[in-house]
Length: 601
Image 1: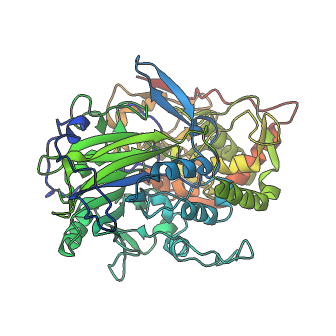
Image 2: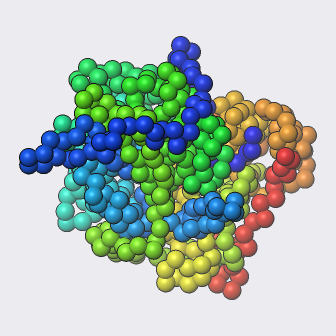
Image 3: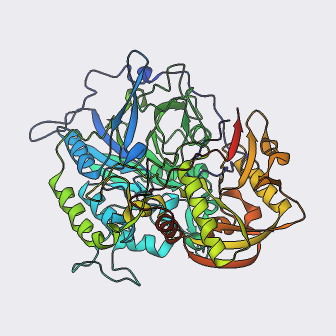
């Protein structure tokens, strides 16, 4: 399969005893068929008895990652499929616009719920990340978010920090950022499959029930079971992450016992549609035929008691039906990432049964265009936090001659980061030979066009923070040549077999990635060279990585086995130092050519 860079996606485990079902052959159009004529719900009022069927609007989004301001470059665009088969790109995102779109969508919908699929925070741009994502929680409160599942990035700073985001209070070391105490989230975070190792109980609520005029809809929230493999060890210390399907099925039964029969699962795990266009019909050739990935397995095994699945994690856009274990089609949605889309789903509630009439469920993704008026309250919130961040964020750290993109199997931005870490490593130890960077840690590229008053080609600290927001350290370790080769093979084998995680490599390291082969053989051993010479399996090499990889993250177990550890500064400082040393206003840095890996397809 293509070795494209994917957001933090580990191989998932699946319980052997789980039920399986064939992907649905029903189209989304079939879901909208055959309900009684009164299926559009009278909300009721004085002297009026509510009709049997009540339409409930479910607005959803996922993977916001603290992107309060409109994302720049490709991160701030979506692709739209046109009637003639061509595509066009549309600028999208920004919470000022998202607020307007959501508020407009809710008009004339008295039964409206807004839910999210996790990763609301973490890997955030400077305006939010600098303040431990308090600005994002405040923004979500203003967006009237009702409920969200946790995602893997909610654990970047550990369970205690997640609890603070939920419950409020000033940061334990940095204190209060303003003269007002941080109030926390107005909405519940759901973490049904995240247990305290000691108590064996969920660290946050496992589910939540929305109620209005006798209508009840339950929400169960889970993150991917593989979260420990894509989050730093400190972030998940003392926690257990259980199987998603088993957990959802368990709490669906509990909700049913309480009389809640309409259930939605918020799942921070996702899939890969056959098209990158947000409006692609993945049911065109039959239910779910246009999507692959972990969510398909999950959807086919989650109990039929669950009426819809709101998903995320892969940053893709899709609205699909996939058969549940009883063979009935069920809606599965995802709204890309960074607030560029939102999903509008209609759940028709049957007051007689208390359940959702699944044949009437309809759903569509909508673009958060920037052509609508900005929501003034969100503009004010952004302005407040930008004022606090400006003294740090506006500082110039370098100059570029063109866009440094983060797209592709090997990206110019990934190569630039690897070069920066190699240069920093050589400062710590002149014997440093090479650097390796995980693709999921490259959160954005650098754009030539100015985003503010800094001028074209100027790279600010805020822009660098958006690229590398995790505050990982740059670590040096010794590996044998055999271990270096093995680490490269782990890109396409083990837990990364199905979805390769291709490391970004520093200048001087070259090799061939042959995607016509399978497993570890896709890395051609004889092609691996450093500065033109073959890697010697018996020799020792000094390698720079970030602390996440040095801990064996992303399935790179070999990189967790190095010796002679030396821990340096944070990775953003290394990048800033490199840009400052290697660029100027009159001599900007030329983006790397991204030609270190020879890819055969």
